[in-house]
Length: 303
Image (cartoon, rainbow, N blue to C red; front, side, top):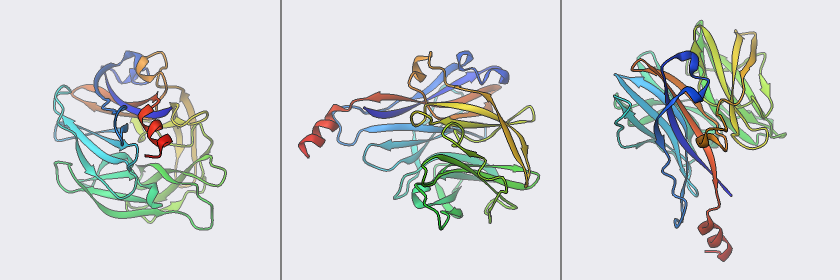
């Protein structure tokens, strides 16, 4: 069976309901998966991120076909009903995903997962249309002297008291998700390892499932559960302490993606929230499995 991903956005009237997807109203889906009769079928539309700019809601996400690296797409809306045609905003020779977009000092940046380059690369929007991003800095490069089996997954930054706190996932020789924490005095670094890093070393909470989210002066972090399989669900923790010398968090709620909702029956690995048009908009993704018999037959025949 092949693993596919799809995207769903939900609308909530109240912020206290956003961790209960049963109370959300589905408003937009991206499920353009090509499953049959295609040499290179589309298998992933995932990692949705929301960004509000000039009274528009922008949705950035990963799009990947089976045999080609992921590229980063964007669509936008002014009314939550009519969406622009998706366009590719960033493509490299290697795989990209997790297109976290944010504003900093009147400029708009993207910090995608670029672990295939063995580095964390920062990109900047070319103009206000947000239809193209260009490389501007390398924040971290793969550590030397250690066996790295997965490099820099799902990175995000939180700024507190002028300190840039960078959260990123690596896997070393034990292949366990390891959430590392780095700090810097500026966005483009240099970044130094936090004294409490790694802050998670397990398959349940060791990999981000979206950017950090502040609500009612409480800072939340979303994690994707990979205990049994990749991206089985999303958990949320509350960060109790985040300074240059200390870090503490505790689990608030498990399994934000309800298995009794058909869309999430096989799980998922992304949760992102913004406020737009007096509503709270939550972006999620979800898995589903398909056999892709055409690919199996082609592989068997050696075509």
